[in-house]
Length: 186
Image (cartoon, rainbow, N blue to C red; front, side):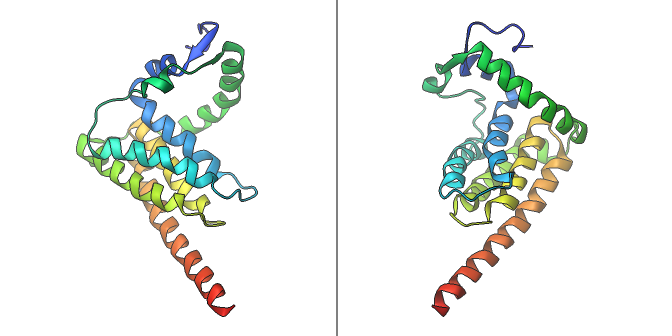
């Protein structure tokens, strides 16, 4: 709806208002998705993307009701045609994701459950921040599943995200162990 009636310059604040309570989940999803894509390992990318996830998780864990952005981010703008191109590229992916997630309330979707998910996001964000080649994919995928669960209040997606996150943490432990052993052999 916003894309069709967007002004000449679209601000992040306007987008945040349109997204409402889904803003945090969408922001986490945007930070997690680049870690889910196969491709060359770029040192530091996962760390940079993990910092906003940790911040958002902290806000959630503390129970801050705010769904907004800091003022300096709200003022950032870009051209409507650039926004429209972004929406056109993202829309097919969102349609596919919406087939998988649905409103499924449980203890994880309550206020206390969201605080717990926020604490988990802090931990998973810290794991994601480790500069480990081949380590960001599983934890990034788990954070993306958690984000989808937050967006749609889907306890199944939240549960899957938590489970994959545990496996992702075990994967990181294995990688660290292998690297330490390899370095010790030298």
